Length: 154
Picture 1: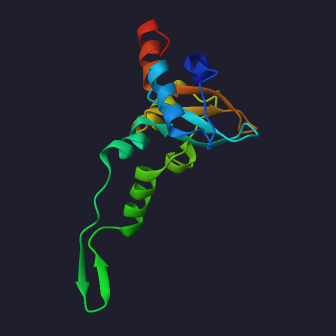
Picture 2 (picture 1 turned 90 degrees about the vertical axis):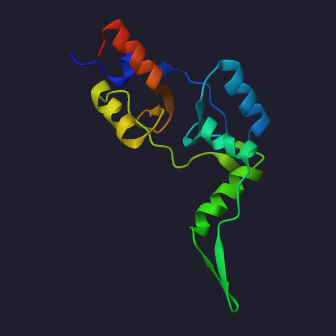
Picture 3 (picture 1 turned 30 degrees about the vertical axis):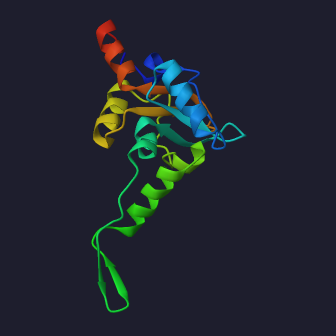
């Protein structure tokens, strides 16, 4: 029988809510040596994911996109909406300000093969695992998959 996400996922993942201060989220990531975690609302529903990538804007800052001014018009040479998202992440103070949303998820009964393909195809490092009601029951990371391979569960 093929392995499923439930067979290898990390159960009861550390999670934060959108109101969690960024400093607290950064501390949790560092203390637990994890690269990301689910963000859940007060009702326990998944609303996003926060990762190291989301936090990098705090340190790196951002640059104003190149533009051309013609008469009274401004023509941006890059997508101004991208600039707005980057600015929001660079100055954000809470998890909700910088998290990635919506989160891409998987279910516990999905085959490990399919979930692995989904991680690879999407360029994701982790997938929150949700039940039928949308509650987070685990998280599947690339590390979980490699450990399953090492244990011969793949």
